[in-house]
Each structure stands twice: as C-alpha cells, then as structure tokens.
Length: 348
Image 1: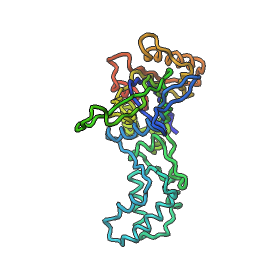
Image 2: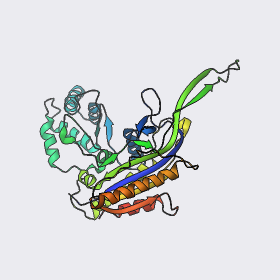
Image 3: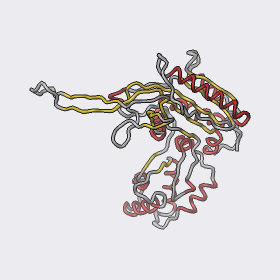
Image 4: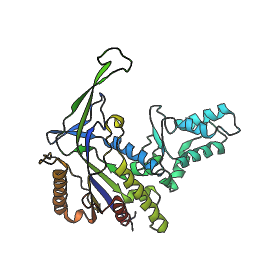
C-alpha cells in the first residue's frame, strides 16, 4: 500500500429555481436534518452526472449494461462461427456473471474483449466455467485506466466477487445548508391554432432553490490500488495526476440533468474548501440550519463551514493528519486550474 493521502472536497453550490433530483411522485427530494426540512440531491444522482461528464472530458469509462450477452454476441458477429452456437455460449457465459435479468453491471472494454477471447479459445462451448478464469484474473493486476468510473465509484458483482472493485471515491447526499421550501409552478399551454381564448392544458410542477453542501472524499491509495499501481514512478504518478485532473473537472462541471430544459440550473461551485489528509475523514453535518443574514445563504454557509472544520480539526488533533488545505471561490486569481495543479502536486 502506497502512503498517499485522501482529498476531501467541501463544496457550496447555489441553485435558483430547480428540481435537480425527483422522488417517485416527481417532487424534489428532501431530508429532515436537525428538525428542519432541507432540499436534497442523492449521491447516486450526482455520481451519474460526474460519470457522464468524465466521458465528455475524454476520460475512459465502463459500460453499464443489463444485457452482457448482447454485448458479447455483437463482438462475435463477424466471426465465421454458427450464429446459434455463438448466442447460446454467450448467454451461458453471461448468466454466470449476471444471473438476474433485472440486474445491471459495469464492465470495461478490456473485460469484454477478454471474455470474447475466452469464448473463442473454448470453441464457443456452453460448458465454459468462469470461476477459474475469474480467479486467474484476480491474480493478475487489472488496471482500470480503461474505466476510470469503476475505479472511482466501485463495482459489486454478487455472483462473481472476484470482479468486485472497492470505490476510491465517497460521495455524500447533497443537502441545503438551510431550510428549503418546495414551491409550486402553475403553468398553462395554449394551442397556436386554437379558436378558444383559454388554455388548452394546465398543470403544476414542483421546484425549490437553495445553497447545497456537497461532500466528496477521494482516497488516492484506493485509486492507485484499482489502477494496479504498486510503486510511484514517473509513469504511475502521471496516471494518477491525470485521473485527479479528469475527476476534479468532472466534479466541477457535473450537474444533474433533471428539468434542465425548463429550469436551466447550470450553476457551478460558489465555494470549495479542499483538504488533503492522511487521517480521520471529516464531513460537515450542518445539523444547525443556516439562516440568511440579509444577503442570502452563501456567506453564512461559508462561515459555518469553516467554523465547523476548524473546530473539529483542532479537537481531532494529530488523528486528522492534515497535509494541505486549499480554498477556491474567494480569490479570483486562484482558478480551477491552479487548484488541480496543487492537488496533483500532492501525489509524490
């Protein structure tokens, strides 16, 4: 195990009229914290947005599929082998990994290619057992550079535990630092060719607004392990630094896509305190809701965030083991590029 630190992101991000993450009846998600209802965006919702943004930025990500056999069959369609034989073999092999037809799993391009090679090496036999293959693959150090999202957010495959990957990144549910009200938007639609002066359709949509606190923890040791890095040489340092760059850029740009065409909630970070440490992780609870002081929620949220972190770090003492601290959003000359460069410098 390398002696690399964790990077903790404490982000404040304000959104006006939005419905970033909905529940089963279409209402904005909420949580009751400290006896006060807050707006909430689930960690899963924001992780998916980060994952897709990684791909847009040029990072390699895995394929999330509910039909592994279909992927395998497609890769074999140009082979000079009986089509029915190929399909049966692919189905049998895929069922050993995903027996539940309702389940989904992340796979990498390299893994799909390796499974296709296994099928070809065994003449597309329906009796291929994947257990020995998985154990051998576990012995080999599988580099997940071809699927950074799997290295970051992990993978659990119940029927093939040798394919499990421990997540290098923890993402908390985003919550507003203050009480948030769900409001109603009454709207109408009028047909252009209607002879009536009234509306053709009427409806109600729900929305809220607020300053969200987002907590994200990136464990560089676990990331290195998932990338099969056992020692830091020039090449491995470059790989890790590139991963940090892609991740921070995606973390900054990613916004849940819900109702973006009607709300355009595309706000970026307002403030971020980024801590680099090798000890106890530290998340802010915002158990006491922030109150606006005539100038919105952001300023008192920054004050509450820093007061909490400073107090807790002092109380935790050496167990926190802080190595560096960076603040983005106050000094206009300190850009996101500067922050990324400073975080990359921590890999040594």
